[in-house]
Image 1 (tube, rainbow, N blue to C red):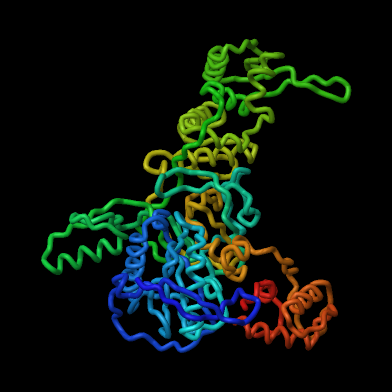
Image 2 (tube, rainbow, N blue to C red; image 1 turned 90 degrees about the vertical axis):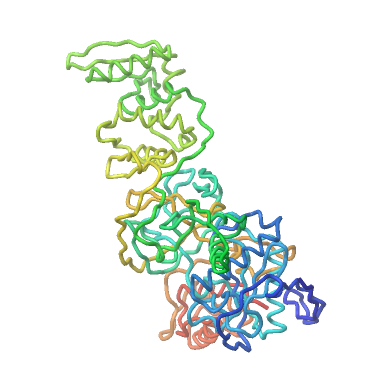
Amino acid sequence: MRHVTYYAPVSHLTKPWRRLVAIDLVTRREWGAREPRGSYSRLSSTKGVKVHYTGGQISPGIVNDHAKCVALVKSIQNQHMDGNGWIDVGYSLLVCPHRKVFEGRGLNHLPAANGAGLNSGHYAVLGLVGSSGLTKPTDDILNGILDAIEYLRDKGGAGKEIKGHRDGYATSCLPLDTTEVLTRRGWTNLVDVAVDDEIASWSMDSSIVTFDRAVSVVEPYEAKTMIIDGFETTPDHNWVTYGQRAWAVGCSCGFEGSPTSIRAHGREGRRRGENHETLFEKRWKFVRADRLGQDFVYPRAVHSSMPGLEMTDDQIRLMVWLQGDGHFMKESRGATSSVYGVEWHLRKPRKITRLTALLRSLEIPFRQNPKSDGTVSIRVYGDDARAHVIPLLPAKRFHWGLLDMSPSQAETFLEELMHVDGCEAGSYYSSAEEVNLDVVQAIAILNGRSAVLEERLVRLRSGKENSQWRGLTSTFEEGRATRVGCLTTVNGTLVIRQHGRAAVIGNCPGEPLYAWIKQGAPRPGIGPVGPPEPHPSFSGRVLEYPPVMSGEDVRTWQAQMDKRGWDIDVDGLYGPGSRDVCRTFQQEKDLPVTGTVDRVTWNATWEEPIS
């Protein structure tokens, strides 16, 4: 590997002097690149650089083992050449967590990673971060990306722009109007999820659900969707599956690497007449929606490892009875009322027998009296009710704190539901309270029971469908154009619900890296790395001329354009002068040149200009 030193302009200095800049460039020969299968197209200059992430799972272990970085770069090249059919790896340069820059297609060569029709506008630089595992770029990755950008500017004719891949093509997302996400505060509409929310996320490595804060939230935009088994996503959204083919984990000769590199190693060895046997393991992975085959498996429920509630199994059972058939007895005195007991009116002998046995097991005194209507009244009074029954469920509704049940407690809870407000033969639970249905479904899904919400009941599935659903009869349908958005989580997955049906699905990858780009790609230590500062929301009114439009939204847009250095009158009147500025700005930003300030142009107005 070589340490290249040269003079290059430094974009983050306030004066246009030049300083000595170094880049750790790993040449193609040094990292063992395959020869391209054809000739590159010439690229003499560009508008700038697009920064990419892998969109897959990156082991955090590469931070401490550079050999794994080399293996990962090789596997990316193999995937691009063998899987995508490209002549070579699609990126111009690739950057690892050790601030080393791998030579891909290199200088003055057309990349393939920006998308059809977009490659001639920008070089492509990949940062080795993914949608799970290593999701947040380290300072060395960020510095390495900036080293690569300055190298491309100085030696390859790259322009000043720094953009993300999604600035050319939309990122993987979910429809806002039908998608709910499981958070600590319950099933939450995707559009209402905030960065501070704790999101249910499942690790494909440990098979454990954790509640972690969302790394970031993707700003909503319009996109076309597709529908798979009733679940709606954008075509490039990641699904969690182990698909039709097992995961290559090694070779009988001891070779290790990515699945692609293992298969390539085996093929090359067998061509030489050597005995190489690829070792397989079924392992969860991410696959784009538009690349799924009909025969695939995706999780409809998962197994969690929650800490457990400070309740015995019998207390959990009694809590279910309190919610289902229990009633608080209240007495009114003046303007206040107080609960003096709990009562159950039961008719079925099996229910009477089960509840009284439960109260005796918990050593809670009760009174049992027959009623003239054929029911039996079971009552717990005074301190016994206030100390041992009411605290189990003070609002007499299930709440989201119950998600902390341990797996064994959840099993007890779901079993007891069938005896109170459920049907054991039909395996469903019913309630008039929406929150009860939501909580029950969530507890089931987090504890290996696929559950579907249908109007006023939750159907619990059993057998093979406890933890996953085989898509042998999967249906693939064209979706619609709608507003979409997404989140980024540490594990790269979300527990979602659409139309009462739940699944574990991939999330939007690369958001931390994209947030850094949107801030102007500052050197670590010079500026904050995180979500960009919020800007005024688009009012929904498109600004256009003629006629002259006026209003506070016009003045706000004009003021921001003036702040960015544009020669514009901040008078609150959108006339021909504002229209002409808008057209020039749209042309500079590669937006449709309409002269109207729509949502896209409005949002672009607050993007940090790249100096």
